[in-house]
Each structure stands twice: as C-alpha cells, then as structure tokens.
Image (cartoon, rainbow, N blue to C red):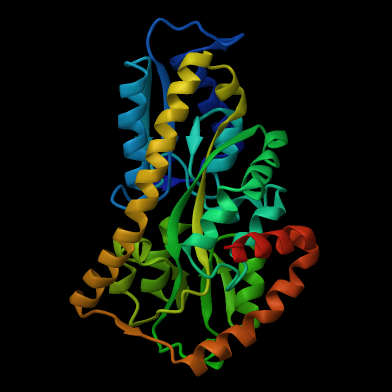
Amino acid sequence: MSRTDGRLRPLSRRALCAAAALALLGGQTLLGGQALAQGPIVLKFSHVTAPDTPKGRGADKFKELAEKYTGGKVKVEVYPNSQLFKDKEEVEALQLGAVQMLAPSLAKFGPLGAKEFEVFDLPYILPDKAALRRVTEGPLGRRLFEKLETKGITGLAYWDNGFKIMSANKPLRLPADFRGLKMRIQSSKVLEAQFRALGAIPQVMAFSEVYQGMQTGVVDGSENTPSNMYTQKHHEVQKYATLSDHGYIGYAVITNKKFWDGLPPEVRGQLEKAMAEATAYANEVAGRDNADALEEMRKSGKITFLTLTDEEKAAWRKALEPVTAEMTKRVGKDVIEEFQREARTQ
C-alpha cells in the first residue's frame, strides 16, 4: 500500500511489480531448488483479517511451527489486517511474487478463472462441518487445488472460518425483509445471485472498508461469520443479526508456485509438516472463536440476535433454491453434483 496524507492507497500494478522485484532483491533467489541467499528464506504471509481471528491465529501458528521445524532456515513474516494488500490486490501480489503466502476466502478464485471454487458459496450446500471435511479432504478438494496450478498458485490447505449469519439495521426473518437493502459482499457471482434472489442489492466492498461502510450507510448490512463480525466491530454499527447459517466461509492457504517449487526439498517437507499442524489448529480454533464471538457480542448489548423458526428457515431455503440452478453453468454441473454427493456420504 502507498501512503498519502496519512491515508492508505491501493497499489497500482506497477507498484505491485516493484514490490515483487524488491522482495526478490531483499530476500533470497531460488534456482534449481537451491537457496542462494546467505540468510534465512523469507516467507511473507499476508492476510486481511485481525490477528485474533481463526485465520490470524492459524497464520501465527504456521509461523511458529515453520521456524521451529526448519531450524531457522525459514523466517515467516505475518502481515494481518490488510497491512500489505487489500483483498482485491492480494492474489495478484502473490502471483507477482510480492508475497509468498496468502489465505484468501474460497470466493476469491472465481474472478481468477477457477470458477469451480464458487461451489462453496452456494447457499445451504453444506449441512455441517463433517460434510465439509469430506469435501476438502477428499479427491474433489485436491482436484480443485489443481485448477490453480496454471495460475502460478499452489494450494496447500483448507482452513475453516465458519457458517455465516446475516446482519442489518432491521430484523431479517423472511426473504421479504431483504427487499431493497444494500448488502456488502466479497466479489462472487454466486453471492451476487444469492442477494438478488432475496431482493437485496449486492455491493462488492473490501473487507477492511465494511465497518465504515456500515457506519456511514453506504451499505445496510452484510453476511459474515461471528468471529469476523466481532473482531471488526460490526456489531457496533448493526442493530440485528440473524443466525441463519445459510452459507460457509472458508479459506485456501496458497503459495506462489515458483517460490514453492524452488524450495530445497527438505525445507519444503518441513513447511508441509508445519502447515498440516497449523491447519488442524486453525480449524479447531474456528469453532471455538465463533462461539466466543457470539457470546461477546450478545454481552455487549449493542446487537440483537434472531433465531429462525422452522417455517422461516423453510422460506429462506425456498427463496435461495434457484441460486444453485442459476449457477450450474458457471460453476459446473459435475462439480456441484460431486460436491453434494461427497457432502452427503456418511
């Protein structure tokens, strides 16, 4: 990010390229799998959430384990809260080599051309976490990562955030309550279709800008997980939240393919071990953090939580049912059907 008059400005493509060049000059050059630098290999891990979110905790755990298992051969620098790049910039920054590791939400890969990842955004496609694990730890999860290879990206792990709830300054109990509301989304054709199906107006907005957008009325509401809402203080600028669990937010931990392939095999193996353990930790933390965040927001007295009746849930499902059919051509019928099949397998 550049800074003018004390304010952060988005980096241009030229600035991203310059950052990538500086990263190479200031760190290590890898050739033929051999590290040529005298010092440790520097791995910049950038993300857009707060350090005390599931993603933030997972990134910090990976840093701890990576430096431990490599015996200091790798130095991991974690940059939370969009310190380096906003969520619209970070994937391009990774591809250019300005950073080496990210954990973007799964919705980010649709605009990149890997539209199959948008299957995770479909409303009510995942009944529970057990179904999620069958997808991410199975052959479909591996094949989805293969879609990123041609983009210069290597997929390393799937990290949880959790199931989403809706927030606004009015109660959201039935689909009709969404009519005309400006609802913030991250860039995703599926999420656009979801809010259009509810009669709302989807507004793409960077995660770091949502609080101010809610405070000033640029957006009326949003969907997110409790931990993201709490750490970004959305409950201070939203009056109501509906415990809808209508969708899922997860992340893919990804790395620059050229960087990863160029690591000495021994180091790469040590980092894979660190990532496996950090993944187990991050996924365990996600469930606990979301429960704690809900409790803290309730205790604040600043936001009212609504629980849907069975009839209201049925109305939401009926309203959102056409989204899957609408997105079949974009996401892929085979991907959707395999996802549903793996999610149902016991």
